[in-house]
Structures are given as structure tokens and as C-alpha cells.
Image (cartoon, rainbow, N blue to C red):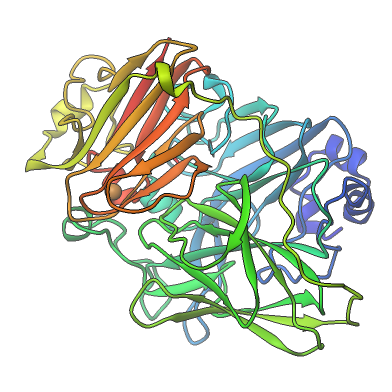
Length: 494
Ligand code: C2O
Ligand code: CU
């Protein structure tokens, strides 16, 4: 096991795992092939995963600044902020049923927390400062412990000053493997992210009034797994499960694997009947699992491209390596479904949720901000441009927490009608729940489950949940500049 990964594992997990090779073998027995140790180079197909064969997976996540080269020389390495020695990292792979104990160590000079995006977990583990836990101060530690109820491709990130921290790379991958999934020849992770860098490798401004009030501030450099147009090695003629993540703060992508038949088999970690990868735009925080067949001859390549913009943009190359695997006909197989509680639509009240611009950008006096336990200057920009149901975070929260957007009765089902009153896209995310996406007034919706849905300009989209998970759950746009300038609230389930 590479030393840098060993450092990430607590002593106990290390003893249990007995090294990456042993862990990978054990995982092979679960029916999902973890990438063979060493087969994928760090920074290309992702670093070797953190795993454990026991009931408990223990990790220590030290959030701090680390230098990493994104731009080629003569630029300098860039001052990333990460949870592991490099971006992307860490990749935590667990089996469904295993418990995660993750210790955040705050090596930053600001308070922070970890939010586990997409996981239906207990509210206390959700990692939202002031709402579900006190912020973890510089030098402090915070332990999160939960058993993810669903298999899937998830991730984690901070929930204050996210615009800068995520902008500088503070995100990690959490993969929960199905015990009974079909077997693939490789299971790789591709994190799509732009970086706001100048020519010298220094970071630029993460939030601008111009960006925040419109589509957001775009990065200058596109990467996959922190590398510009990397070559990612895949086993020749192998069936590849690729977990595509949009971890950018701003950009919407629509990915293609040019030259291969590719099928979407999961959205935000939730299995769906295989469908061709042929138009599934992903806003920030959205993920898809894609199944494709690697080229039949070693050395042949496929292109990963983003076709969302007018000009398709190449993002990475998959190159076949090694002896050709004796695969038969390529046929996408469905993943075993997650047990997401089914909302009872007949009995479900419709809750309107309107996403709009604030009439006038409101500036909060620093003195008012200081008086809000809920909204310190780290968790909120001093301006608001956006609102949900005309409520801009933290308007109305002058003494204590702002009121929830809505209080739901535990156990009941609800339909949210998400109305986009703006000319911009908004990827809308709910914590602690998985939406059932029902219908739209503007397009044909493929029924699916998701924790983040991309609202098109002027669209009305209906989603449903069964409110079985009590607590205060954040509900916000995942274009981070929108989130930080008002398009954020929370839903109470009691
Ligand atoms: Cu990734 Cu509050 O979200
Ligand atoms: Cu938005």
C-alpha cells in the first residue's frame, strides 16, 4: 500500500484491511471488481480506494492546504485544499451494510464540517454547521458515524465557505457497493471539475457579483480527476463501470463516451433501467454511473467529451491496455434497486417551491450578520441575489435560526413543485432524502430517483418524497454562488 494512503487509514482499519491488495480481493468476492491496486494511476483513474473488510470502515480526513500541480510548467503547483494528499481523494469504498466512522480533522484556519451528499443518514450526521452540529473549529476534530442505507456513488464536501473550499478541491468520494451487483472488469471514478486559475497557477476570485447574480463564475481549466485531458487506462475489451461526477461549483456538463456504446445505469447513485448515454445534463453535484465496453484492441482509445456547450469539449481519453478480455456480447445489466421509501402520491400535498431572484440585491450589514448565530460571514456572502419562496437566506433569522421553508409531518408523503422563475439553470438538492422525480411542464421526464435535479429556465418540475427521516434538512441550489447568495433554506420533518 502506498505510504500516502496508509497515512489516511486509521491503525484499526489498516489492521482490518491488511493492505489494499487484500481488500481488493475481498471486494472481488462481493461481485464488484474494485480497481486492481496499481492498475490505475493516481490522478488518472483515481487513487487506490480506502476499503476495509470488517463491519467498520474508519478514515481520518485532514482538511488542509496541499500543493498540487494542475497547470503544466512554467506555472506553479496550485494551493489546493483537500481531505487527502491529492485531488481527487480520498475515495472511500464500502460495502452496503458496513458502517463508516470518519474523523474530520480541521487543519484549516476557518471552521468547517463535512456534509455527506446524497446519503439518507441521521440528521445529526449531516454536517451542516449550526443546523445539525456546531462548526468544527480550526484544530478540532469531529467524528461522523453512520451506515449508508443505499448503495451508490456519493461524495462529501464542506457546507460553509463552500465556494472557496470546493473551488480549491475540498471534496471526497464515497462509494457504497451493492452486494449483488453484476460484475464489471473495472470500476472507475471520473470527477469533472474546472478550476479558477490564472496562468501562474494561483486561484482567482471564486465569487463575483456578476457570476453570483447570473449563471455563476466559470473556471478557466477543465479537468478530470485533477488532470487536464488525462489518459485513463481501462482493460482491453473490458466492461467498464465509470462513475461520472460533476464536482464543479458552476458548470453543467452533458457527457459522451465517443466511440463506444455507453449506457446510464444509475443517477446520483440510484439504479435506473439502463438507457443510452445520449443527453443527461448534469449540474453541479450530480452523478451518473455509466457502463461502456472498452476498445477491443490494446492501444485503442475512446474520448470522454462534454457536449453541453456548442462546441463539444474533450475532457479525457480512455485507452485500452493489457490482453483483451474474452467478453461476449455487450449487454448492459441493471443494478439492483435501492430501497427508497415509496411516496404515496394519492395522499401527497403539493408544496410549491419557487426559485427566484430577489427583487433587489440586498446587502446585509456586517453588524446584522454578526448577530445571526446561523449565518456567519463564512456561511453566507454579505449579499443576496436569490430566494426560495421569496425567503432569502438568512432573511427572517435575525435572532435565531431562520424559519424552515416548510414543516412536514413525519411519515407523510409530499410532492414539491419546483418552479424556476429565473432564466438560469438551478441544480436543486435536498439533504437526507432522495427525490422521486415525477414530471415537468416543459419536457418528458424519465422517471428516476435523485438527490439533485436540474431545473431548466422557467421550468416547473414535480418531485416527491416520503418524509420518513426526521430533522432539519437543507434544500438549496448547488451552483455554489447561488447557494451562498440566498438560494438556500431548510425543510423540517417532525
Ligand atoms: Cu452537496 Cu448542501 O450539498
Ligand atoms: Cu442556482
